[in-house]
Amino acid sequence: YEKHPKILIAVDSIIFGFNENERELKLLILKRNFEPAKGNWSLMGGFVSPDESLDAAAERIVKELTGLENVYMEQLYAFGDLNRDPGGRIVSVSYFSLIRLNDYDKELAKKHGATWISLSELPDLIFDHNEMVKKALRKLRIRARTQPIGFELLPEKFTIPQLQGLYEAIYQT
Image 1 (tube, helix red, strand yellow):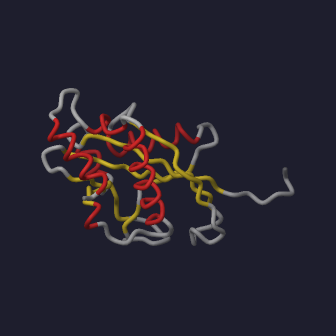
Image 2: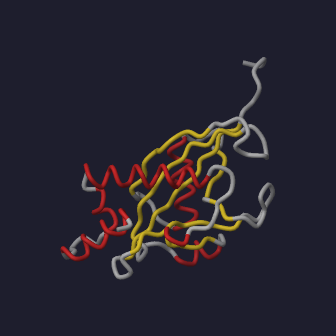
């Protein structure tokens, strides 16, 4: 193994949030406070520690940012283009999560400089993060058609108009 170059592994989290009162799907993003791309909008991500799995790293990132555990989370795709990150050779495994906006710890997100942005107002993100969001939204729409994934974003008891509002938000129509 010593002959082979070392490649960093990271996870990036696409955290979708829904508030049934606003009927809008949002994404949790932050302004980077370090180089490369300092000051630009980014997904929340981080490197995988030697003592944690990919799933554990993704769960850690969501918990650090929102205070939530046991949220719906799904591994999406591995991004490994040679020049995807100017900081070095980094392969990123992306995950998407679904949370109810009323459930998360607003102070934690604020502490990390994170902001909920409507998908319709999403700014340009760094590196290949825009592509990550597009793939996650595509996958979310597929899941919404084939599995009861939408229930993760609604209260335990909900009305038909709330369910309709959620699906209108997911499909942006």
